[in-house]
Length: 618
Image 1 (cartoon, rainbow, N blue to C red):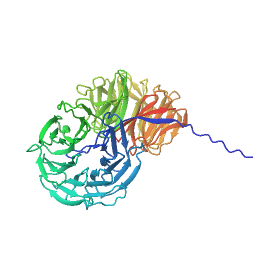
Image 2: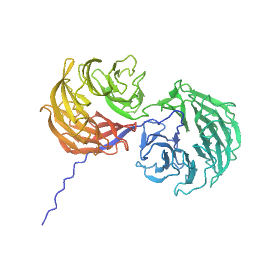
Image 3: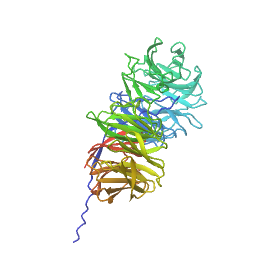
Image 4: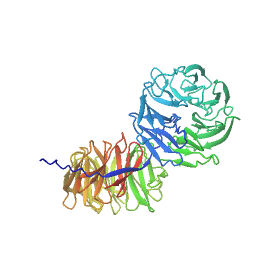
């Protein structure tokens, strides 16, 4: 009798997503940004890149990210039932997906026209959807949500339609606003064009019905807001008797009781209007910089939100219009690098982005802010913290900056100007830092250049300094790692060549200095044993695409790698077979950087501009 072979299952380790620190809205100057609200009043949502971000309005640190669009998403709106969200992208795809489950299963997908979807509106029974934007032959469509069959025609405009809304009570009415300076009024269903409204002299950016359906408002780049009768479309008044704002108006949002209107303008203010008596109740001055232009707004329950051109989300304070109750900050552009540091007993995450922004996050609460003063003017490529508690960052603006983490202010702090663009920086004890630039390796001591290797004979890419501070490992595009010694104020090539399996993309010493991990473009991590003269200790296979980042756990037993395959693996040094796999860590975006907060908490970031914390259990 044959015994069935015993199959040994690979030991499965576990990971779970603990926290999501979401990106800000993606904004563009002169383009309105739509904030969607949940009918129950708990969440709000917006888009950035290919992501739809849902956040809790009372505690915005609680966030969820939907990433199933293949193209940049422009707008997302909850169905009045609250069970589904419709989101539209630049290719004209509309996805309708479930909000109740974590997986956000797709219910239906439509392509109402070929071109950017700019706004979406649902009927109050959640059965019909109107979609408008930049189609090729038509600028809008209105159809049944479950079959896609048409319930009317959106005609009457000869340019892109920016905004659409549907009256939330019967008899249904639909209104649109377009770049042809007109609004159009429809009756239905089936929705039929009734007449054009030509009161505005510039682009109509936003049209919205009041929740009770008695009125609708139109807002335009001409600084005017007009109010109309919701049933007949007859003009009632112009808000503010002249212009409502000094600049173009990008967004309007009605109060839940339909008596007031919130407006957001390029004149860097938001205003609350009492529509019945036609007067301004509050003006919120948001600042004097171009980045303080107001591009979007949402009135939900007692919360009044606005979006600035900086991407910041402002919670407006009716009782004190000059200062927002809170401002949500973060990144709106892709994050390139991150590092962690304990400061006053708290663990902070520092992240640097493609536009030169550096942000710090409280790893417990997600509270975050950016450094003050003028900082990097281009992509931050790598960051690390030195022994004196300074953040050392290198950027494509050809500088290395030293920023005190107690002050978190750039001004009056050390800036080292380099001759060529830096790609990577590593720090060691004794005030040393090594910067790898294009075709050059530079040694810094106490924030000054003291030595450089100008033509190393290969293209250096990444660098790590041994914790003891005497040895430097430099990885090159030629697939080798070279070892240098720091001797006073010079770097000496030790003539040691460690072979990786492909062009080197990252190098890292374990915290105890016993091992050097090297990852490469050929999808492999190789670990070398330092004490044994850098002999190869183990090789780790598993990634399906180029690996881009590495980080050792504080336990020196495990390390994590992130790659272009959107995977993160946590490897066990002694056993390449035992690993934790985080699939789709940042779906549709490759992982750009990793760091460990402690032995069981890994932080990841990516080009989706969000930061995530994972709990790893072995």
